[in-house]
Amino acid sequence: MDATLQYLLDLLDLEPIERDIFRGDSHASVIPRVFGGQVAAQALVAACRTVPEDRLPHSLHSYFLRAGDPGSRIVYTVDRIRDGRSYATRRVVAVQHGQPIFTLSASFAKAEEGLEHQDPMPDAPDPETLPTADELLPRYADLFWDPGVVKLLLEARKAIDLRYVNEPPFGTAGRQREPRAQVWFRVNGKLAGEYDNPVLHLCLGTYVSDMTLLDSVLLAHGRGGWMTGDTVGASLDHAMWFHRPFRADEWLLYDTDSPTSQSGRGLARGRMYTRDGRLAVSVIQEGLMRVPR
Image 1 (tube, rainbow, N blue to C red):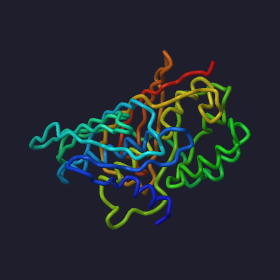
Image 2 (image 1 turned 45 degrees about the vertical axis):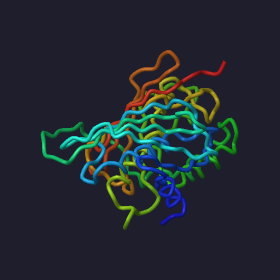
Image 3 (image 1 turned 180 degrees about the horizontal axis):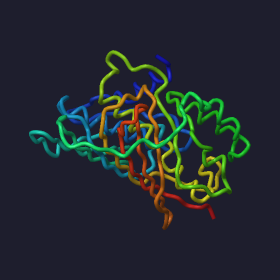
Image 4 (image 1 turned 30 degrees about the horizontal axis):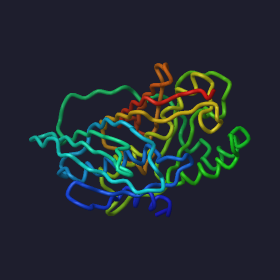
C-alpha cells in the first residue's frame, strides 16, 4: 500500500479514550485550518464505532462551527440519540481547545429491499484519458497567488487520485462558465484485509466529498478561488446521502453543480456515480464565498 494512503487510513483510525469518546490527529493542510473533509470523515468514523455492524450510515448532516487547528488533535464525543429496530441515530461534536469546531448528525439503517430508481449517470470521458494531478497542476503555477501552492496541494492530496474532467476554476479565472464541474477520483491503492470494509469506503468518500464541491460556484462567476486569491471561501454545512454501496479504491465520478449564490454564500450539489453508472452518493453544501475588498 502507498505510504500516503496508509497515512490517510491511520488518520481515520481514531483512538478510543473513553466510552463514546475518541481522539484523532490532524493532517497538514495547504490552508491554515483543518481540512473540512478530514473532520467530517473522522466524525463519521466516531459515530460508526458506536453502531452495530449490521447498520450503515445512510445520511449525515453537519455544520462547520470554527476553523480547526491543524497542529492539535481533535476530540470527538458521540451521543447515542436513538437505537430502533431498523434505524439508529448518532450526534457527534468535534472539540479542540475546549471549543466545538464541528457537529454531525448521522442516521444508520439495516439493509432492506424497496422501490428503486435513479437519475442516469451523466456523460464523462474515461478517467484514464485525463491528466493526473502531477501533470495538471504545474501548468497553473503562474496563476496561483504563490507558485509553492502546487507542491503543497499535491502533497495534501497524494493519497487521492483526482482527475479533472473540465478545466478547473483556477485555470479559467476571469471567464464565466456553466456552474457545473466533474472529477473522477479514487484512493491511491487497493483496500484489502482489515481495510476492506463498507464503513471505511463510506468514510473515504466523505473525506473526498469536500475537495472540489464548491468549484461549480466559482465557475459561475469566473473566480479562481483561494488558489488565485480572488475569493475567500470555507465550508459552512455539509449533507450527504449514501444510496448504494461503492468502493473508494475504484473510480467514482463526482458530478457537481450550483443552483444559486447570494449574501456571501454559495450552494453546491454533488452526485457520486460508480463507473458502471450506479448513483452511490448525493451531497449538498453551502459555503462561504466572499470577494476580498
